[in-house]
Length: 333
Image (cartoon, rainbow, N blue to C red; front, side, top):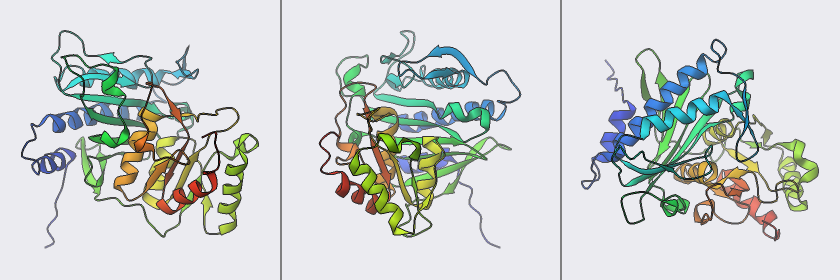
């Protein structure tokens, strides 16, 4: 009889942590609490058509985007799951203009959590996959409380990064710098189970390019030339969902490239470096891929503000490198 091994997220994280004798268990606890928040958000997303959680709040966030009710819910769930643990010195969220302090009544720790609580939430009313993105850094400032310097660290210093995609199933993908692992939520037992061990971006497969081609009139000439090059190859399909987590998830598993270039409307790009580009770039690198802003490695960019925006080219290394060849002369990136 073939032996079957069921590996939960909790077991996997603990086993990985045992490889580091200096580990205190704090990292395991942080991942466990993120997974708990993901389960709560997943349940609410799956009930979105049955409860009063769809639609806009009537407010706009600091980026000028309409705030969805689910954005507010997801942001609060993650904060409440993490604020009291004693492992974090502060947090930062795409939905908040400033660093989020740990409430004074709770102890503080040596780690920083940055997160996009619900990427792609405007798609929820048409049942398109959406997701949560997170990044973990070690505290670098002195003193008990975390500060802006703890959040403004280069992506190469991330201790871990991951995302949760809420689709036909709920899946959590993460890396701590030693491979990329995917876990699918089994709702019958309420556990994330290892379903995708040691994920690698395929070098040769049914690869796709993913980009919002409706922005074509606003693209710079170098971007248009690269798109013409991709279309001329004849072995790439076009796929674009419009939800970053979902588009990246497909790219990670199937191969290809996702692009959100700078254009005349968004000359600095549109995606947030700390909450979106940097954590996904860390995952992509550990899976054998690459991520740039068109010229520079995303993981080498030193953030100067919490909500800094960047162009993003991410996916199979050969396609990202080729994008750099076309865009290297674009002085505006």
